[in-house]
Image 1: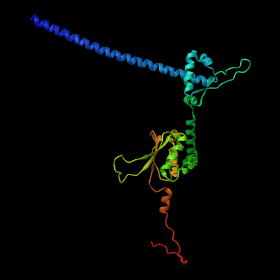
Image 2: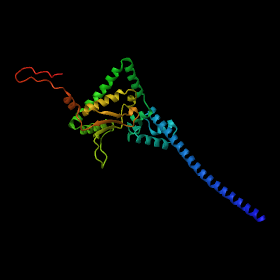
Image 3: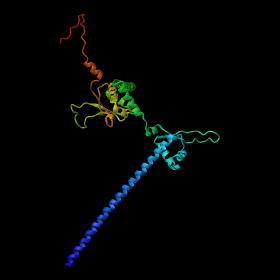
Image 4: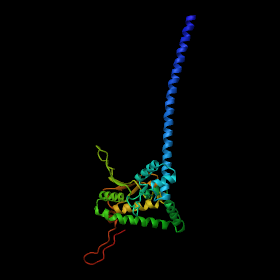
Length: 299
C-alpha cells in the first residue's frame, strides 16, 4: 500500500515539474515576444519623433529663411548636431537648398551657408492649387455649362496634339512605330508611358481570333485628381491618341477611375481611320466619254 502511494506521489511530482517546466518555457517565449514588441514600439516612437522634428526644421527654414544652421538651432532649441543632421537630410531630399550670401567688407571670405525652402519642400508642406483648380472648373460648369468645360479640356488636348504631332509623324505610317514614338514623347513630359505589343502565347499556334495590338500605358497622370471629378479630360486625351495614331483606340483603364495605370488599347494590322474612310466612301457616278449623263444606279 505504501509502495503504491509512494509511486503515485512521485508520478504526481514529475507531472507537476513537467507542467512547471512547460509553463516556464511558454513564459520565456512570451517574454521574448513582449521584448521584441516593446523594442519595435520604441523604435517607431523614435522615428515619429524624428519626423516631427524634421518637419519643425523644414517649417523653420520656410518661416526664417535664408537662415543659418546656428540661428535655426537657437530658434528651435535644438543642438547644433541635431539641426545639422536634419538640414543635411532635408537638403539631400531636395526639400531645402543653400542660398549663398556673400560676405562684404574687410572680413569677406567663404560665403555663409543660408538655407531656404525648395519647390519640393513647398509641395510637402501642401498647397491649395488643386482645390482652387477644382473649384474653378466646377464654377465654369455651373455658370456656363458642360460645353464650356468640354471646350477647356479640348483646348488642353489640342495643345498636347500639336506638341506630339511632329514626333509621331516623323515615325512614319506604321502604327506600332507611331505608338512607340508617342510613348517616348509623353514620357519626356512626365507621363511615364510605354508601348507594349501583345504577343500570342509562346509555343502555341496563333488563334484565328487573335488580333495583334499595343497597350499604351501611362504610369503617371498630371491631372489625375482633377480627372476624378471631370472625366472629360480622359475622354479628350483618348481622342488625341486616336487622332495621332490614326486608328480607333479604346481606353481600358484610367487612374482617375482607381486603376494604378492608364491603359489604352491600340489595334494593329487593321485599316487606319483614313483608309477606312476611303473604303466606305460611296462611289460617284462618272459621265461616259460621249458626254451623255451617266445613269443613276437603280434602287
